Length: 242
Image (tube, rainbow, N blue to C red; front, side, top):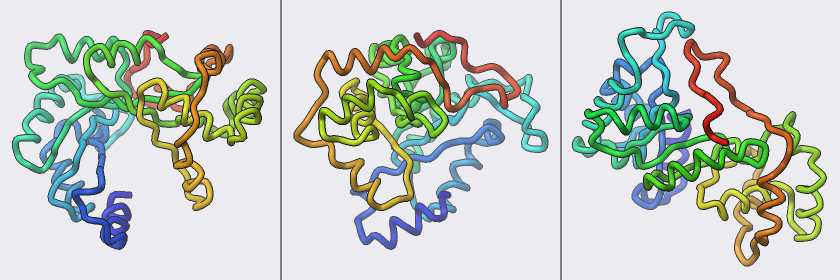
């Protein structure tokens, strides 16, 4: 959706420097980082992006997305990513869907000169990943939460504790989930195409969750991942986030 995002920003009339733009290097582009950012900037019709992420720690053959390049892993991709900030076309670089095992592999490699600014990961009360969040924060890597509202088929949709907290606060369950993410020190990026829901998602000032409520939400018994790794040619999640 890069073309649409770029056009939307132009149509908004808001100066480019007042908007944070993040885009990603997808799996088939791991061997073609330079080509990837050039393509993204062309589609966005922008001179630079604020953040460029490796979407997944998995390189795939563009001709067959079920095939992993055996001679190319995310270490080599990061070596190429590190060249981008000096070009002026990328302000910050980061990763997405990296667990502790893969973060350790990246950070401990001698070629890693730049610590990722961000790790964008799935975070919600059914997938709180406390060890991973703590690990990243200890390395000064900011966590951004995607799927922060769970999904329509997740246990959160009917969770009684979430419903009770929302009712007591006079807030929607979605607002409570967003506040939970913010109070953990993460950024939240909920997805919606409904104007009223987008507006409600911003109504997070002037209230907060208590420590007890945060603990209740963080200790939901059901574990559920919206986005797994079974569709990838290599395993990237190792249960090292709890």
